[in-house]
Amino acid sequence: TLRHVPGVAKVAPQRLVEAGVEGRAIRLIAYDPNADFTVQPWLPQGQRISLEPSALLVGERVLQKPGETVSICNRTMTVASRLGHTGVGPVDESYFITFAGLDQLIAAAHQLRPAVPPPAHEAGEAHHHNHHHTAVECLPDLAPDKVAAFLLQLAPGASLEQARFAIGQIPDIKVVSGNPIFTAARQSLGSLFWGVGAFAALLLVALLFVVSLLCSAIVQERYREMAEASRRIRSEEHT
Image (cartoon, rainbow, N blue to C red; front, side):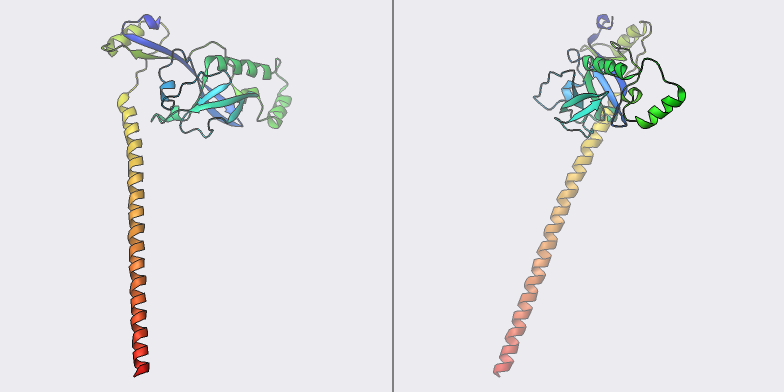
């Protein structure tokens, strides 16, 4: 339906869920590589990846490096690549997976979840002894084949207000517009921070160079003073 809205050029479905990795919560974003225009453009220049269901992309601030693995719902997921700095904090801290990969994690979580809940006291003991391996921690109780949001790219010359109005007529859809000014400001501040850091490093190098010159000049002056004193002592001895 969204693809037929006048002015809409591309539609990219996504789903954001919270998963558990080694006792800590992570933000997991499922996306469709065939329709995506917001995730893969941040891959390193010239890099093209056909993401497997068992692979992940990670944001710029995520600690895991390409080639490393993480375990989600007892499934080993390999980090395929790292995205560049987007200037959007939640994106830079997220993990990205295909919808097929998320559906496999949901199936794995359902297998870990007991069919019949144990009595309250047993459930408490199980939670205490298996705190890092429960299905609740690895993934919430989710239904597969669901989409939480559609990211839209308008065609050149399309009116944002007209597109918002047309989409607003579709039942059960909430329109949320991004603010490019804030994103541009974050990216500019990030560049400014690195520029200030580089300038400070150059100043430090220049300061160290000046200090080394001063120390060298002082040492040379002391050598000349000692040589002069030595000559005076020898002259006095001869006289």
